Amino acid sequence: MKAKMPECHQEAMFEIFREMALESGRSYEPVVIPNDLKDVIEKYERQHIMDALEHYEFNQTKASKCLGIKRTTLIAKMKKFNILC
Image 1: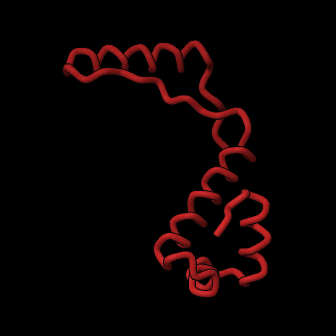
Image 2 (image 1 turned 180 degrees about the vertical axis):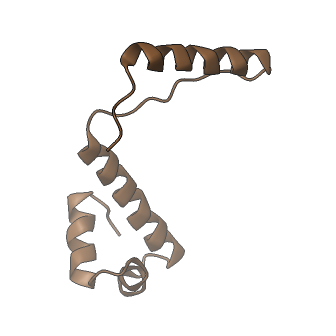
């Protein structure tokens, strides 16, 4: 297992990257990492379910097959995420 880079080195490396981005004319936006992984996963899962439902015109059977889950599981997730058909 590799040792973690000291934080002072990380900051120096980020500063170099920021300067390089500014010199190239690109804006530098630091990546914001959410604190709550559960929220991120739920947002992604909800959007993925919505995409499948919209693609199959809200046909739950086809959407659930596309998602690789049972129709009853899809319905439970729809209730959880307050997705109404």
